[in-house]
Image (cartoon, rainbow over the protein chains, first blue to last red):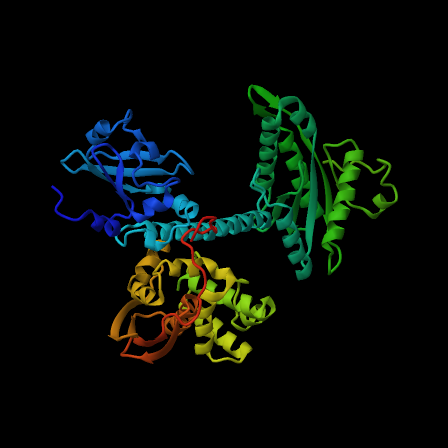
Length: 335
Length: 199
């Protein structure tokens, strides 16, 4: 049946084997010689190679029956490289088997130090190696970009101006807004608000209840402020509101009293009601060039005075608080 | 313009002249970020700003800088990966030259949106070739001359290269191989990691 001399196979199929009717190797391609752990010439093919799919191929007769099917083999000795193969019978009891590395080509090239000349020019092995390396390089570049983008995202989140729980501004936004107001030399008032009994709600009814209380209080503050005011959550249950161009004590008194009254309204959570209140310290900018840190500090002193006076009330800052800040001696200013 | 091209220019300048010089070039080019991302796209004019700034800071013609970029891509240890990808093109320099026709397609296989000019190799005579470049990619011809020269060295071949303008959006590199096996050339193994067995 064979019309071509077998030696033509060496160039076209460098991983072929020509088998005799007894199953011995009469000829093998140069690359197959290179990867075989023991000499191939005259050896029984099935003693060198283990055919593991289809199963139960232990004789030349069984091998011939696999004709045309895809064979899965591996070398019995050495590195046991997996191989793919196909057998064609020569019609006289013998056969030709052509082998390839399949997906194992990357490992095989390294394990046996193969070069381009070990593959037929029509074999896509070298193109596949090219793609594997190129893909790895592209993946590395992509992964490093993703890592940097993730870092940038974290940094952007840190720079964000919003408190994610309440939707109010955060500490950073407050600092920026205060700086701007102070530099503009515009008069303003600052309220430092601390929720009373919040910790008890959090401890006895859980974080979900605590979060709901915070959101409710935040909503009240947002509703009681105007577009140009800044309401910010600056700590767990601490808030700061900056009232732009508002220094009237009467109006600030009304605002503080109304906010405390509204915050004291019970909040329903899972059939239970949460009750909290708020203490507020108020500072009003006096000088032409107010100082942001000092405004925060004076509001804080006033808040402390409100707390000392029994909570659930507000206090305007007054200089005598500096001397008597340890004693709740100030007259109640609650409306 | 593909970020890979700008990133290449950047790492070439950084690896060759140092980060301080790169910072000066980036400042002169008025870049907003300290570097380019290979996987993003940038306006083409940014490329020219960086190239002009590099020319001014280094006091070097733009063509020479571009040629050095090509040489860098093959010969610098930091771009060993690309040298390997190019070496997959052939077992000797002439076979490599013939693989250049496929270069734009090979590049697209790796980076789908990287469009390189078309390349066409013509045999003129024994060891003389014309490589025709058709397409718009600023500086590509000069960089390719540097890259081919370095690849010739890599294969151990002695080659003369000459870039000429040819038509509106075309250039031709005239290649003369004086000696195909002039020097030893650098090692190339198909496997990325060095193997133990015989070569």
